[in-house]
Length: 219
Image (cartoon, rainbow, N blue to C red):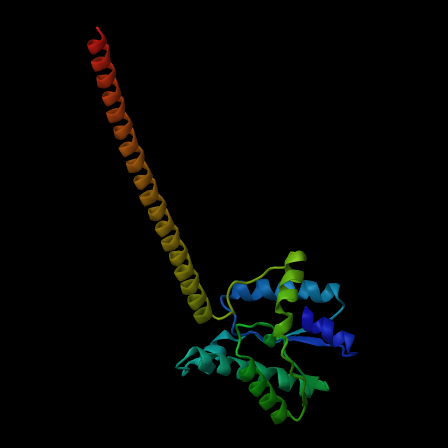
């Protein structure tokens, strides 16, 4: 949302090319695509859907030994596809909205976008849009748009699920620790109350004995 707004303010009319063979499962891919198509229609934006080839994507990232390497391979495949489309259809430049997310590798995105554009002989229109992430989040929530809770590929979903489970476990552990502290404090308070009650009872017995002694002595 924010990249489109910024580009239009600068007199650049974007054309959305949806190259997301990384997204899985297919139902998730379609849900995200349908969301952006609806929004693009509302904003009168041109939209083109690339070919959905998840098996080719899996091959492209198969040898990745780390999340960073997997993301680089993913960026490379999708930017190469996008740059080829831009070159074939006479576009002046290629940019990307991926840099909106602070959870992505911004510098690697830039490197791979520049590489793809250089190979196709077109201009690279990279910009770090991450400072606009909060605004994009706010606007999309206000618009009631579907917001995914993982990057797109199944490995990222597994990682996101694991992180959410860890955060949940940490919250539950903190909650249990606070409950234990409250329980200990309550037990200490009850013990003090019991001690006070026993002391008061003892003092009452003393007063009763003294009163009885005085009564007997006066009699």
